[in-house]
Length: 307
Length: 321
Image (cartoon, rainbow over all chains, first blue to last red; front, side, top):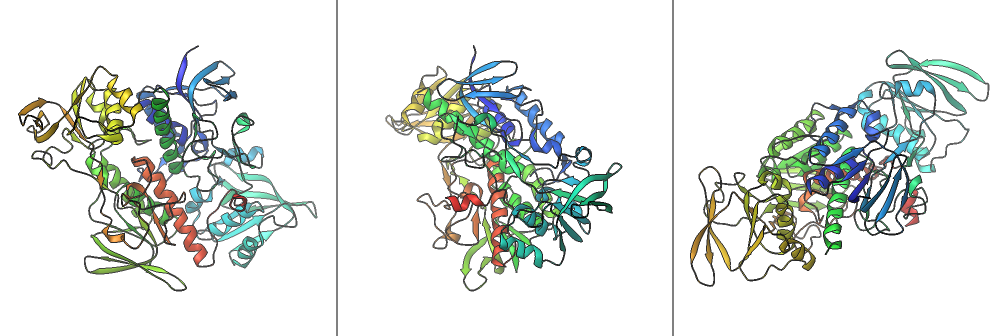
């Protein structure tokens, strides 16, 4: 079996920036991109905050650029999902449905996924009125009517942030109590632009090409009503994509990979970058920066390891 | 009064401006020149998302992007920064006789590679004289190049170059190389690498493009010419930290000491990019740090005002630590 120098798991901004840098360092990285490649930017439309694109760029187009760049420098991209890893001894092993791979080092960049409500109509309007990232998309909703779905700290913070742009923000929460911390609740409740509706759920998203409304069900009365709305932000949390690393590497209680000294992890030779370790900043460019660091750290590790 | 003043007009400075302005903050960028270290690179190939771009061109794009969201930019040289206490602390930035005030400050003034200081160097910068092997090494495929310098920085550069160059000379003023033994071993095990000891560069030669260099043998005093197409000056960086001396904590190399969220020893003061103690000097890393600095500054400002700070997926981790 071929022994790879570095395998990169994940193909969002962190994984592919690691790919570009590892390829340019002539490490011939293998990027296991997954069947759904490109990460969270594939779900967004216009990306306005990736530095260098002053006219904006479509998320999928940006990721295609990353892929082309990685391949141009000699990186190999395979669209396979990783099913299992073994970091217990070297060389490390990585399995996909198609093959078993052997490698001297690994860069984990599997990212995180926003949690969604799971309604069929939700898929249809993602990037067309439905978003899971206020920082990314809030700016598009100047003077608009917005709904935020959720009841935790993240929902309160998203709602408060969105009042900078929106005309009104309605928080829809499925129970009679918010999960958010008291201080976050107090702030949201004191904000005249925010209204919180309890015991309600979004049943369906409405519109043709773009979201124009939501159907909201009152769980107390069991009655549903349609209302016109310009945008919906789903703020029910994120989940790091780390199921395959359980028991192989140190994770925190939420499942995020615990970084040690930059991009290192609890396993010597395994590096990490991007949202799979970052529950706070979560920007494409912060992930890209970390992916670059991880590739540079992996290169240094390979040089020193080889003596 | 601005919300945030950013000192430095390179990749880090304008990326910080972009993210701060997008958060609805009132932002001013002050820079002595436009471009920072990206100016030393004619062509960047490793900035993700952009196939090939000139260093200055990249900075101009990010500037335009920041200005789209209302960030202001003045060209001026900062001469003094002072922090004022009180209920709502703020900073006063003096530049060309003007004073600018802000509640948050992001230092992104970068650093400058140390020049060799010989005739021909200034004229041929970007035309064969490079200060960044990571940026430019692939442009020297099958060419003869020289690295001037010793130590780990020069060794890293030389390792990168040795993968591309036909012939690589490493010039040392002594008979030693002084890099990490593993790096030295990896490097001098390669057939295309040659250490030239006791050698001092006298002059860089070439009309529009580097064609060679004059070097003096410090043992014999003899001067000879060495034909090379590229010269990588790896003598470290100089940093102009006078403006923040005695204001913020610096390390022994005068780099600003930063925490994981790019905060510094002074509340409200953040730093990003090559002026910081970060080990990595790449445009995309500077940009990532700058985005973090801007979001952390936003968080700081909102909390100062008693408002709501940054969205975090998981705030609980702070309590666990």
